[in-house]
Amino acid sequence: MKILQRMVAALLLVVLSPFLLLIAVAVKISSSGPVLFIGQRLGRDEVPFLMYKFRTMYEGSEQLGDQTVPNDSRVTPLGRILRPYHADEWPQLWNVLTGEMGLVGPRPQVPSYYAEYRNSARYRQCMSVLPGITGIAQVRGQWWVMKVGRRRQLAVEAFYARRKCFWFDIRLIALTTRVIAAGKSI
Image (cartoon, rainbow, N blue to C red):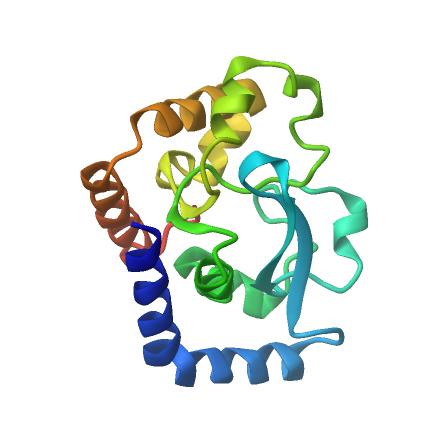
């Protein structure tokens, strides 16, 4: 499965490369700062890695908090276009190619995000699989995650880790495609 995901990521990186270049230029022109946001995240077995995204917030905004809110003033005008279609997350295909992430899995979080749940069985289940670009919580939506809170998000992502299989992943990818096509922010 991991080899198949790497092959899909490589193919998508090649197919999307003109768009990746266009977005990179647009990010650089539209606001000051780096093109990519590079953040430390925890992967399988709590191994830290650097996750890549196109920068959609003003430089330095991450110091004001991790969670975005509706109409967040930290999001750039270009970010408001990229985020609903998740084009800002396309650089994470590189993380899939390098084996740090999968296409589907629990969303990788900042190391402090689940600190209070570190000793729970659900946390250990989430950390037993590769984090993914998409998953149940992403299909449900960012605002759902904010509404139900971290404990519920952890429960949903632990459910995925317990039930992980090829057909479940295919279903989540199909649902993600539908959400992206509708331009809904995941």
